[in-house]
Length: 271
Ligand SMILES: Nc1ncnc2c1ncn2[C@@H]1O[C@H](COP(=O)(O)OP(=O)(O)OP(=O)(O)O)[C@@H](O)[C@H]1O
Image 1 (cartoon, helix red, strand yellow):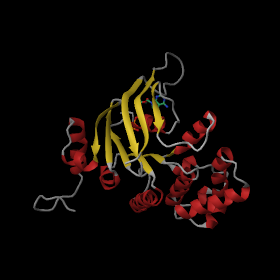
Image 2 (tube, rainbow, N blue to C red):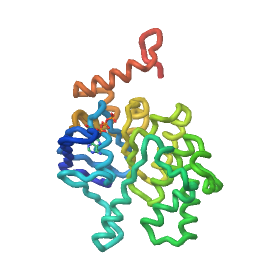
Image 3 (cartoon, rainbow, N blue to C red):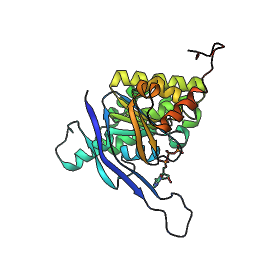
Image 4 (cartoon, helix red, strand yellow):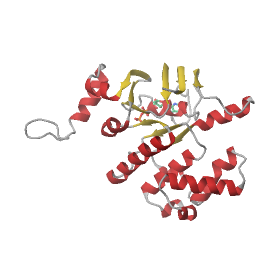
């Protein structure tokens, strides 16, 4: 196995705002804990509300800075200067959010949306960027014509694919997805799951995703990380955790999921 990144003693502490203004965030402590992500694996983060799943996802992709601890990238950066190395590392982990429609700029065409990260992060010429965009559109199952569409002209599933294309365009090693399936209807959801599995096979990508849907977690995650009150309370292979959950909270989450699975008249679970 090849380790892509490891979080060491990762800690995030936010104080409650003292006075004035709306209380957007309350006091919260995440970690310290260690976590590794291997090449081409899928790691699901599960846990109750406010357990810190989204904060962990944001720390992993660099959208929030840890108060303590560090995230180490194990691949060699193809650059020698520290600034270029840091820039490259930032590109290694990209995030996609729950509601793609809200994260896509409505004033830009899909082409415009996909040019942006390339303009900001690479020295590619216009023609090279066009070539890269055509390739990534096809990777996520969209057509070349979609380049000229605005986000509102696309379906939810297609918008999700654009969000995926934007995440992929800088050739990351890890995609972090916060509830990527929650807002999708069941058929689009299974298409998105299949797309993720296919991209993983084709590109050797690692996926870290947060989900309350344990059916999908069981279907696609190699490993599971269970969080509660800012701590990892249990982690391991998905099959093992589903069969032999050790922590009481993991047991509760899994039995709540299993109670939703239809039972046959003889009491056995339907496949
Ligand atoms: N950007 C932020 N800055 C500071 N604190 C934050 C930030 N985002 C969330 N928090 C705080 O971190 C705690 C955990 O929130 P988080 O959103 O990570 O939980 P979650 O497990 O993803 O919950 P849910 O399943 O309800 O989305 C909350 O107390 C929240 O107020």
